[in-house]
Length: 145
Image (cartoon, rainbow, N blue to C red; front, side, top):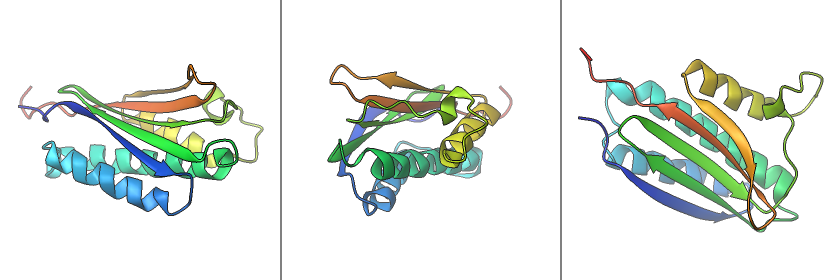
């Protein structure tokens, strides 16, 4: 039996203080949904790293155009998706394989962790003119499956 499914949103001001607050809120929700124990440890660690990097990036680069960032957590039996939305339309290059860039290391880390876990990540524009950066990771199967 996998985790309990659901979708949660965590709006926060676009300030550095929102990074640990959001990470802790997501961690608490993941654990409440049953993603605890050794089986899920790597998944939870990866998701929290991704949340930290995405929220930090949004706060650092989008705060001028976006007073709030919204993290969304979607838990499904087979996958977990985290996304961070802000009001800045700029599409970060790190998720587009820009190896010549000197910045964007956090987004390269997100992409690397996501792909290594067998997941996917991307950037999408919102209807309001901002963007959503998301990563979806597979839930580890039950032992023996």
